[in-house]
Image (cartoon, rainbow, N blue to C red; front, top):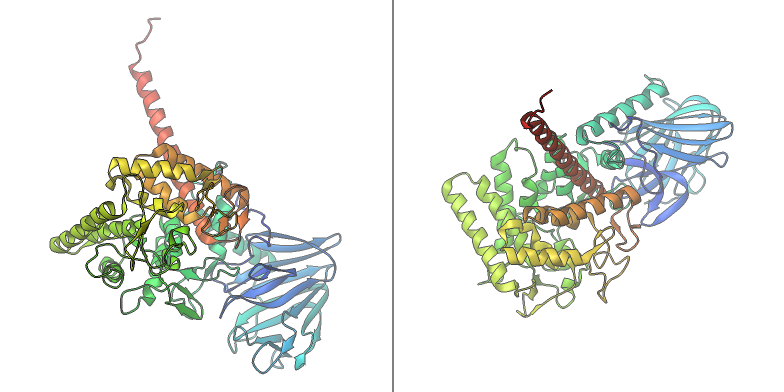
Length: 577
């Protein structure tokens, strides 16, 4: 049964209300772990900034669906819908609204300036924090301006009463006066249709067996921004809460989730960090509207991810970019004379504070070597000629052999200090990540890794620190909580290594976790509670990836069972009448 097109209802404290392409959204979350009483218009240009506070004239219930945000109480209602990526419409019936600057103080270098534009009568906030303007055009009803042209500290904004309607726009310096072309109902229905089309593309397999699929699609759709600043392509931010960046491994999971239904958007996700590849071939740590950080990198899972993407429109360019990224690790991140590369800090691995990095920070780890083996195999597969293919295949063989010879102890992988040369085990799930190599590992190795992964498994999925470890913390970031990327990578590696039952169990537990607790940045491994940023796109993508694969397997198994039953019926001896 297909899920209804009206979309799910969600809490604004969990997920912002936004629209594909927009750089702003509506949420009470106004900073990291900071919840305001009222819903705010929050922009993500130049960072996360609360711009306008939306205060209804009376206490109201707030309801959010993908296409419409509503405040309601007995006898009154306010509705909000996106007309396009930079414009929203609001209307009120029996419920007034104060639309006020979130920051009450204007200084020479910060805050909002508010005035009425004499050319069209609209009200404009021009805000230092984003360097953008926010125009309020009154389409119907009574509007009272407060604090127009005020300096210093003041209440600034528009108070609406009676039956009213407005348009609010985010723009740069000037644009033509707002002109209404559609009624509010048409605006809301158009937004609904856009989201429904997106969901149909990325989750055509959804059913009552996948109850979180539409909400996962909404998390991705609403976190997508149009190109602006350093964001060179349509991009799925990690969140439109405070994690409003693209990190250079997170993007791979979003690309995979989009690959089947929206291949162009999927390739935009994959390529975006490569638009900022530096002269050494390294990818940045993160990219956002007004900032690119290079002080760390992220793990080379890109060869692994490419196996799940559709054919590239520019295959030679993809090969060249992957070659440069791989060569960075083989040159800048290997001690002379050694085969295995190293991380310079836990942040490079994406597992910032994993216990693997407790003894030393500059470390040769088994996960890094395994990811590079897969990346070298992908380069060999995409190589332009047999000589290049042989070169990369040989490099992959040497990396795999060194991984097994130098970091495998006979029952587990260890890490090795790049300076000291000493090795140590840890109780981190990171040490088990070479399972991504699947059946390229010897059977005793992948079997031991599978057993280790099973020991990390809680009712909700694989804990990133062993639950019995003295270092385990319920909200310890990579020292306990369950994360989407490690879960997807492990599930895939186990399946390719033949540990299908364990892979199925991990998939089922993580899907159940998302259906229970949403799409948080990570989850308490013991209770399943969502932790940190609560609208994280790679978590939503992980759900879509695992759910889509499970549905395909279910359908294939059903088809095979039907075929077997039909064959049996045709070949069954008939009893004479």
